[in-house]
Image 1 (spheres, helix red, strand yellow):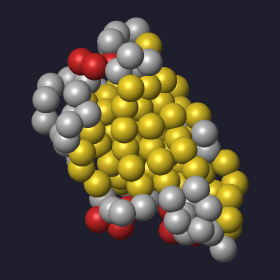
Image 2 (cartoon, one colour; image 1 turned 90 degrees about the vertical axis):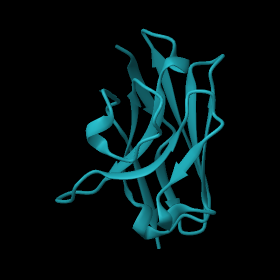
Image 3 (cartoon, helix red, strand yellow; image 1 turned 135 degrees about the vertical axis):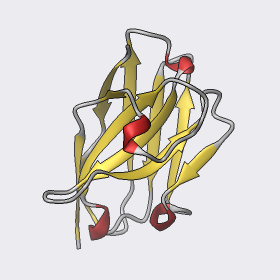
Image 4 (cartoon, one colour; image 1 turned 90 degrees about the horizontal axis):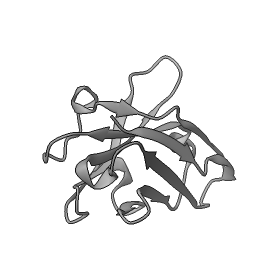
Length: 124
């Protein structure tokens, strides 16, 4: 199994940018499809973006298309989420997740390993 640690969250103003990082350890991250999810109090965890093992395929939540970019550096065992033009609707705890296999999935139940999350707060 792989261990995941997120970083890069914080408090920003609407329109600002943030880059989240997810460092993987325990097993080579290139063996996993990686995803970012987010959750606000009282709501289900929701899909944000995912990336294939070699980085060639990406999938995004409709509301973040054109603003967020997921990428990975397998040599560093790290996945990134570049978030631009942030607004208050993006406020949430962001989680990194990993899944075995090759399908780039948007379903939380397909992911085997999860990080502890990093808080992103966007003030309007």
